Length: 414
Image 1: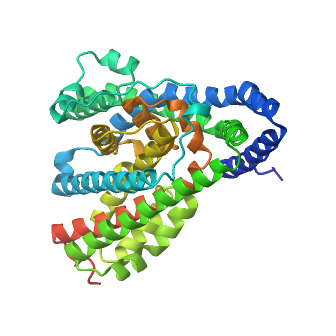
Image 2: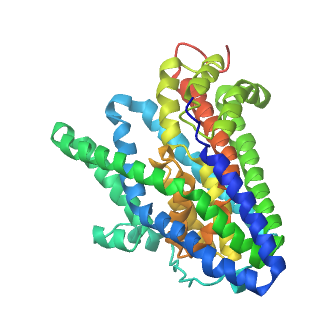
């Protein structure tokens, strides 16, 4: 029988444990051990981070255009499409705010470390915030190629929206452009798979280096940032999803979570919104959602609904900023909300999207992307919770849209 290949999550877990063990051994050895990890292990982690930075722009550009095109003719989907997109964008913005609130509470209580003196090899160039109107003007590029070169992610997002919408409106004459985007996106997905497959190397080398320089203290900090993210997940699920189901559908929070439980658990263990779709559809049907509406909302939600990822990005951004000795201003936090919300269109279907989008947010704020190595080792733990939250939001949206459309069945009354 053919030997089954070890799954990537298991490889990352083994790399995480091995990195911690090697790092602790090197920290006990002393300066020579720390020098070894910095000189011979960390460079491989740097290569992994460089590859992440390398694919950020093409992944965001192509995945967003492809995501917009996958929605089809918005005239055809009509009010259902508009209500669905508005619901997801609003909840994503709320998720960003919740994530930033809890992250700043933890940071304000000095629960996140300042490792700049030990890890501060990268330079920080803060992006100025001159008011909302200035940000609004700056997100519209005068030179598309310059946006790509400078990795100005807000401008890349706007370019993606313009091209995606224009190709859709062009109809048959835009078929070649549609096919080119689809082809290039298939290629970039394969490149993404290759880069993500290198995660165990990045996890091992960075964890060994960080643990060697910081000892066991960094492990407690990582546990705290995970706790912060999961508190945000739970609060968002209760305050936004169950409350919207109660207000718009008339379904109690207990009934909502009981009905969505099967899909939530499947998403938590599989970390795949797409793989959870059959279970989500069955749960939504049993809870009273219209079959045709849920058939549209749930697949679309697996593409553009990224509330869990938004919370993760905000928490991770504040954590990484704290580690880098950077204190984010209110203006920079507004930029995080705008970037994460706009990026919710298209990128959720990409494997490893959370890590790529985090690199995108760090680039937007001018925070050294090299610090992403601190958190990539535990990304799988974040991914379980954020996927569970995303799927829960898809089900809540299908119920609300069914109610708003006033279909044949009364959502929540079955």
